[in-house]
Length: 358
Image (cartoon, rainbow, N blue to C red):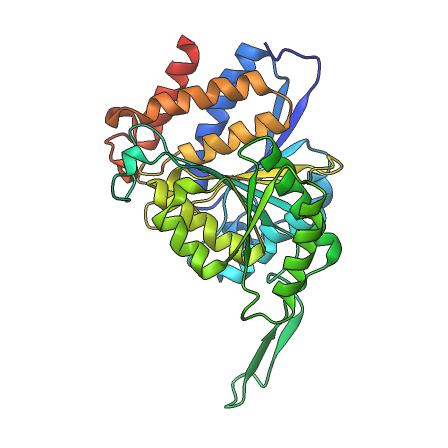
């Protein structure tokens, strides 16, 4: 058992849309695991969301980041709503948390599951098990730039990408270390044939770091060719390391190749442990299905698995992962996006039953 005198404090931000529904699933599952394993979980819930923005003009209060600093982890449902521009919701909550807490690793595991049909030809005979390590604090998603001459015929927008030796080195090191415990192969996503400054610099630094890990094979792929190969031969990849933008796009593509973005998890990690890390499903707030019981809770529950592993609750994490795998085998305990007939609540109930039966 993971029983400990330690208290694990979790800040739960359900957010918007289906984030609220899958957050309820996470709460129920964490309560069950806590009762079984004595994890000392304490959850505080925060109503930081687009609705709060519409009511108050801010997604979170001025002291929001300082409030989160006291927690061991942050669990986020989703953020985004039709009445709030995406750049407002993203830069009002998610990105400030990632950057204030130096969550420079965005970890996105991707794998196939028995019962979930891949759109690939012969997908059942091509098991996929890869991890995308996305740089999460700089790169293309910088605040450097601006807009000039708004509304005029010469209106101009300038967006600068920012790449530092420090930032590239630490994400490359993380990917290489991860690969050394897996298939010992890292694929670096680049576009050095088109981006004349940033990507050649990325390549140089990644190569330098790889030289320090001779047991790991480094392969470089232009991101457009890599996107094609993720569709043609996804089973051939182990660890992919990519910049902020490239990693964002590739991880959604890879998740879709396995059958559904609804089951995809992510972790925003500060590997030093000095700050809280944040865990969230990849699927977003999905306003079109919100409130209909159609949301797939697996992406959130797998994110809970990543969170429990990060919080040194490995036994509980493994038990939950086993329950997720079993639930996905049966159409009666899968949601419609993965070929099932169950509602969000029914999938959650099935996972809870499996946890109780273990």
